[in-house]
Length: 547
Image: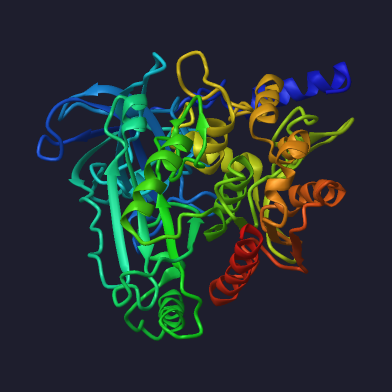
């Protein structure tokens, strides 16, 4: 703040209207509490994790299916340790929630209520830290659908926080294991335990991939193919949404998948193997495919275990020109970073709407100059920073609210959310073993030391600028970026910074593509058949250069 008066005004306002992280307020104390337990049939033995209670005003869907960031129902969470069957984890006014921070803020009325338990695993890491995190069960680090997590029946009750009331809820339903579709002629799936990751985390950790084979693969056993390594969020679906059966008339995505199948098996489609990676980590549905202090050697595991396994078991041309990366959003960042950090191994990247390539535009946050991630402070005004918009400029979500949602799901970066993986991948380890947060999740205040760490290790524009003399020649013609100039998450701003640097390069000039879609939202760029044709042309060009 820029004046003592402003500090005093803000402090008084904060004390009156904002509760602290554990939910405690200076007034309006509630007598309400929720006691969440589980049965021995649901889980035998003690548990450590986090309990939740969820309140809905309609029973059209279970409350657990109505929990979302911006438009979701209220829910609250509380950590517990060593809980036995029949014992209760208690959610009271000190428990943190979203969008209502404390249960004392619940308006009196009738609600549909459901309890939920997120199970944590103890990891004794090779770096000496012991942490408790949700261990992915091949669902893609999604607490609401993770096998082994528990939930209760839905109960309709009357709630009045001003009255003394204990609501007891028993979780006796267990989310079943993920069912993986069987292999077909076209689609193969692999999964194996990673030695590198298991050694680091002190628990069995797994990598996997879904492989889409080209037309004629079985009929031509001596033919080898180029490969498209597709980066993105965890999914067990076939690459490009490939689907062999016709979809229902109102199933838009299924129809697109079947249309792609028709193209893939046609003579028009360039013969290529397409591969999506599965590398969920304890902080997110993917690891960003990088080595980092919090995540361990995910980058090494992918480069030294996963890709060699794929290329040894499928007929892939094991030459740089034949390995092309692609991906959108998080996958856009990963595909670009893999190309930049491994310029000799990959032959090109086609990165759509990538996450921030320059941390001067981490969405709308300048990590190096802003003091707060949630607000811009002027002399007498504090303005909230948006994080999601529609193409007509309407703001749909605020930075503060996305982070507060994650904080309600789990403290210490344990929500499995988008902002948590940034903290876990880009940042250092904190004192107790969890990621050191780049900003305070409650207040938004940025830690300049952590921001500096991000800058020194994962700012891709800065890395290229500092190392262009050494790696520029290896990247010439390989970098392709596509983004809408009305990207829903403002990611086009960082692309502008990257483009400015790339256009300034000499000896060599980068010789790639940066393209903007006018008025286009997130995930704009070439896809499906258009992207495959671009990549096939690029592969031929790189092959000619290599010969």
